[in-house]
Image (cartoon, rainbow, N blue to C red; front, top):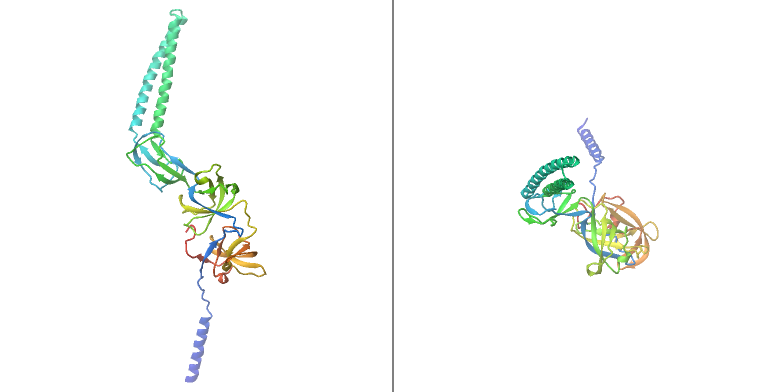
Length: 366
């Protein structure tokens, strides 16, 4: 083989090698597109109402000692997680122990006295039955015996109360939860019933807010609502569980909405904005969304919006129809519900099921 032919063969082999490498597929990393979003809340007829409030635990209990005394030890702080039966604080037990000993001594004396009075009563009864003593002497012996028996019952009750007070010198958690407030320190004197701790049960939370008298008649039990907490981007679903019947400060009525599946890092005291579609309002006129959030649809009068799913961090292609109402740069559409989170920009570059991230804030529960 000549030099020219060898060079030709080498070039062919090199070209084949390069061509073969080019045929290997390299998997491109998934692109997670950041998007701007908004929460669908406003109906086109303007009947939506928003109220400010606070997050509260659904179940909470104010804890105190049932007896007064000097606090010996406090074992928990605000924010601590506790379990049912866990010791929270104790009083100096010496006064209660002394009361128990005194009651035990009184009981011993009362029992000794009862034994003597019983023996005397039996003796007087025998003598009376045999005709040796008068009825009056027998009656006196019987009365003394019954009085001694009553004294024993009284000292038993005193001993039980002393033991109960001794047990109550220890304050334990009645259920598992979180200590949300503490107002006691060691070596201070406390009274029976004085508020020392607030214990919030694990799990449930309510949004508590006030509704003015002009709107309270339109709020009903079981009404769905959305609750926005500044800590989270995604609004929380809730149901109205309590509607106050007596006006408070500012002629507002207290209303509670139970949060459905609250995020684990939600805390009591966080501020909320509660959005209600009042009973007198309907969504027949559609919800207002930015025009920029609507992509062209497949048929006249139809459009496409992308609804964010916080569980999968993806967007869902959703068909909407025009409600034929325009307000500034907002359009009223059918096909969405209050609380939906939709992409507001770049919708022409989104596809159904695409993974996205939210711009400007952390996701709920993150």
